[in-house]
Length: 155
Ligand code: CUA
Image (cartoon, rainbow, N blue to C red; front, side, top):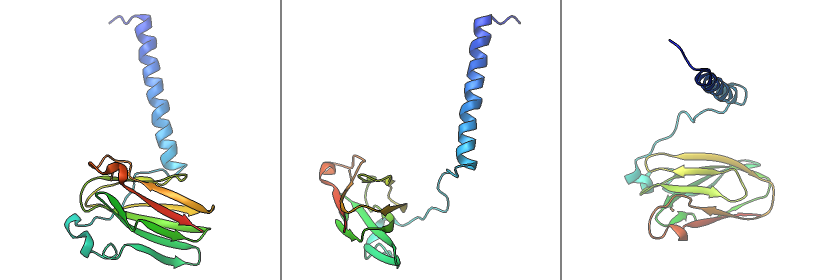
């Protein structure tokens, strides 16, 4: 079978690009340790208000410089709406939703996750600068989506 020269170049560049991109994925997974989350927590979305620790959402101290924040994202607010964090604290956020898909984005940080009913999303950030960090819903969740925000007050 005769393959035209341009066709060969095109095929080879496609295969080379594929190998390079798969190489990047392999490098990120092995050398940088970037993998999909595993052992994800699930929760009954109809019983969020009765399921600990989401029955009492808020901050828990886990060490001298570490805290856990349990936050419920619901239409159209975060509960609690404001949390107060001492500067220098590493906060692990756990968020879930009893209704629809919401977003969980803290401005000025890499915390940016989807909050899906039935699942507990988690992300960690160390707050090294004082200030009010805006927590925004970044998934369109209904008529009040643009009113859905919270505040991380770092002092
Ligand atoms: Cu919640 Cu948009």
